[in-house]
Amino acid sequence: MPIAKLRDGIEIDYRFEKINEDKPPVIFINGSIFNYRQWLGTYIPAFRDFTQNQYSYILYDYQGIGNSSPKTEQFTLQGLADELLQLLDFLNIDKLHLFGVSKGSLVGQIFTGLHPDRVVSLAGYGIVNLVSPKAREGHNLFTNRLNDLMTLEDILDEDITSSNFKRIVRTVYVPAIFGKKYPDLNLKEKFISWILQRRTSSLLVGTPVRTLELLFRYYSQEIEKEVGFYASCLKLIGMKPVLLLNGTQDATTPIELARDLVPRLANAKLIEFDGFEHVSPNLKKKQARAIMTAYSSFLSDLESK
Image (tube, rainbow, N blue to C red; front, top):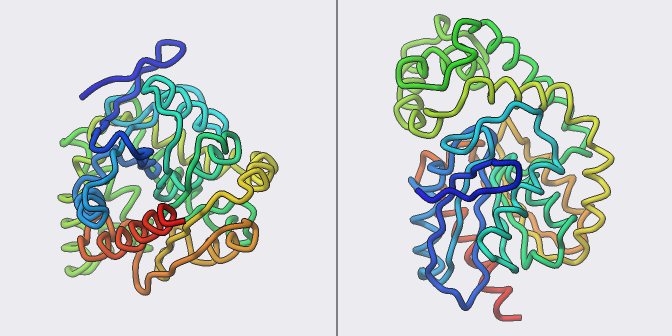
């Protein structure tokens, strides 16, 4: 896959599907730790179908994810927005639509506030909202993930591979998903865990384990320091059209975060998906199609105005 060369020798792995150069492309912004393959199984086929293949689109991996350069310094909101800006400049893209999942929704908000002249519209699923009273609970969840991860001292300096992937998932993600340790799962839960492992291994393999530590430490200890910066960016989004999408059963970015964000934006709409969870649209085509149906209608409405 092509590599974008940014400042300071940083390389970003990306995929640019040039379909229609008459319309601004859609930039799909990743969640926290999955590489950009997270979009390929369910979201992108539905997006291309419901938009009738009328939009070019770009996928990319943050520094520290997948085949992009390793990351040693802590993440910051400004840094994530600058990384996206450099990628767009590298690709000579002036105007764009943003669609982010989870952390990607946060990056989209920051980027839109900092560079409103570049953004045609902002949308996302699994909405992050740092000023919501509910946000503190998410920080606590990542403290637990960090503590679990740090028990894997012998592999912290390795990349995630097919040989250590299962151990990482069982140690870090099973407690986050099921609320208990892997040995305490019943047979049905262990089967669900096995399915999740099979479907997500390609989304994590290749990423340094240290990136997990950086992210979990950032979410649990550092991100609160950026709430003021985040709030200032929200105010700068202005009248940009915004579509917020969220599942009612999302435990990682609870629906309350999106509901709280709507009145803070001048031109935002929220669509709630009953029963959808945080990553379930990555695994269930029917859910991804429902999300992309809403998004394609949003884009179509923008074009008709």
